[in-house]
Length: 391
Length: 241
Image (cartoon, rainbow over all chains, first blue to last red; front, side, top):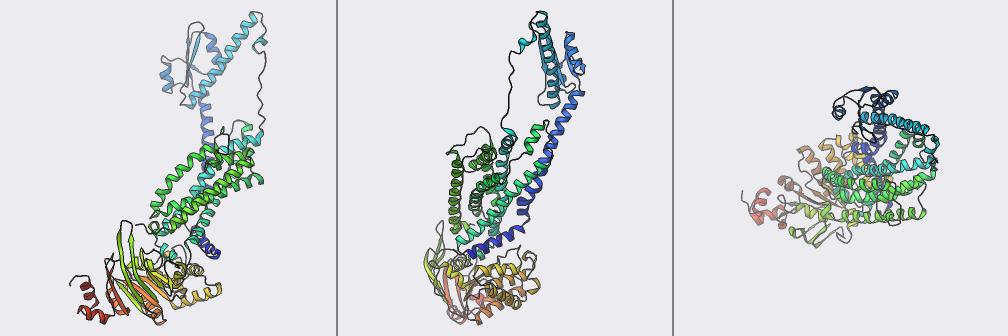
């Protein structure tokens, strides 16, 4: 093994990657520009939609079919505009009214609210109607108690209070951990995909592979040099994704209704210790991803074929990456052995401050082992002339 | 020097691409391997360049055996194919520097060798232009410079003039003549008869993976009774013109 040859191949691949438009788009443009843009646009859009729904719910009328005057008065008191309609359900579905309220006589009297839950305005209006009717109900109960000489305090024999002791940092870890691991892992595989196809199937397609194979470099040296370049591309994508997500979340308003949630999203736990732990988790995974994608893409004869081989792998990555970020899964040594899931789960654990040293070690060692296995497979593939000269 | 003895190659599906091929190429000799498409020329050259492993038989290049010392063999050869195989996003200078490093040429010597090749092949004007922006002739000069970079004693050229215009093909022919004068063993596959007749000291005709005949032009003429290489070639393939 000659390190000077590995280094020469690594530097050449990096130079080639930097000058490749497709690689730069997947490695730099997507994490730096597209992710913050999508995040910003989607949060603004959702916030705008919620605001619009609230406004419309206030301005749109509610159809009422009721004989009890108190019911109408309660709605009017809540500044809900009332109209008459024969068919309440039809009116709600046709969006001529935001919601419908029908009084059904009997003992007890039933008041039914008709709502179209697929429509935000209808949901918001139904919520306003519900609050007004609950207030009326409470008032009626208090009146009855008062008439019977019973104090209103019987309604509240004790008060239940719920206090979240997690703190803003931990809450941020929870909210962050569910998406950060998933996004990071997905972006790492996406960021590595194009460079790896370029240096394997792309090199076959452009007929540059023969000259490289006919050089004095050994197969192992070529695979190592190319894998280091692929790993670098993957890690650059991960770093840029992390930096860009952090920056856009910290700098942009989350348009949250509550200052607590806004504060939570701003308290992203990314101190030096947390970042180091995340980096240690990601490096073996980047090695694994590079070798795995290299071994698969090498089998392809062209860039296009390489894409169709690696796209299904992205689908395979999405599921465990998403599952690993879900709360409620207790990390066990056995779960730490599942590739991709373990890294996603570990990132969540690190952000929550709950990752144990044992699980961290198992995850790291397991991913290093998978990386070694994938590297051996990639090297064997590269030594297989049926793969290299497949026609 | 190239020594090939009983070289065979069977691909998966038991397709016999090269069948018991033997020949020798001396130092300072240009040896032409002629054959129709699919005759086994490229497979033979790829085995000698250690890109493919032979199913049986053996070959030695400058004393190094192809299956036992493949990396040593690759240090002895300059390999060029008609596809050229140049990195489009790199400049000729960067490509030469890269292959110089792969050949283990020390930095100062590498820089001086590259400069001498750039001058020799008149490449200075485009040495720092990305290869994908170059004309076919410029690309071919770059490929030749890469092949000659480590001053190898053996040149393996697989249809190097395929698809090239006459002036560009001429550059290759000149490089082959110069290599011969410098005492290199040149193994050269082509199906351009005039080129082979003009350049080669000895010619082997290969068809269906088998060597049909090997010899100088005079020996081939004597054996077939034909004068022009084109007629000899067709005769050996059993196709009268």
